[in-house]
Length: 301
Image (cartoon, rainbow, N blue to C red):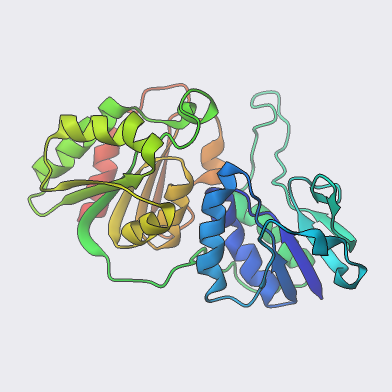
């Protein structure tokens, strides 16, 4: 069975799709597509790492005209956006069957369209089971495990690419992060805190927070690429921060992960998918620093 997977846009979406991709690779020949929008750049980095250890065909690259080749017709296309047969405008894939890979919220009077009943990993795995996979849900890992540095905490504080719009709603707030980092460093003599991100993250969050924490010996800020950030987070013992793609990367490495969820019901669909995870519901309320710190202490024992 030849399967085309087009569900890999954005870091978080790709990481949550890894179990499905692994499952499909065990029942067929898989080609994985990645998009080319700014939000897809991180997904491409995940794609590269995953390709090193998993046997699937790389469907990336600017030229995807081969999708129209009748010789490349797929038995099944597991697609998300766009779903109706196009990968991008003017380029169509060929498949005998198309499976809708989008998570499917259920409408309710209380929660409306955002009434998610399952985690996104479980939604994606429905496709693998439908196509013949039998077994447990694979993990989300895409990097080789390394020894964690005890009490090294990665703080996910980035605003990412949309500082004034939708993604800004997911941010816990710079002042909260300043207070939390100070609590961690003052409570544990052997603790270190690290964060990383691009220039937007640095200007909007990392540098202002670094100046207020004022502890360059134990609080490290790294303006670097996503690819390098993956290695940084892979070495950390604990993640605490916003509901972002980096939270899902942390969970995929086995890092003890605390996510703060500011959007209604997103904690159901997008909570950290790992053994040691805490999803804090922050919709329509202020999440107190002490509340978050109590969870950090649970993971610092």
